[in-house]
Image (cartoon, rainbow, N blue to C red; front, top):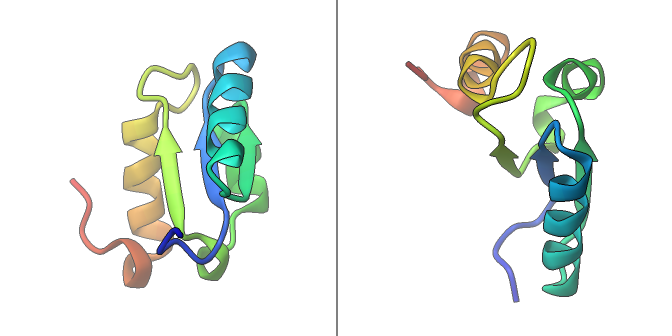
Length: 83
């Protein structure tokens, strides 16, 4: 049984990778929400819903590291000081 209470959020700009990771995590009993871009994720982002976030660090537009920094600014209570 997982200690994660909410969904696992996956971000990867490669649809096949996102699909494979989603299948893997669902097979282990996780609820998964997948996104192909950081922009789409941010449009639906609610800090209180987030439990686990797996990021592709080499996405176009806004990469995983940049997204982490932005989340730290948007929700410092949840993310702390991400650098």
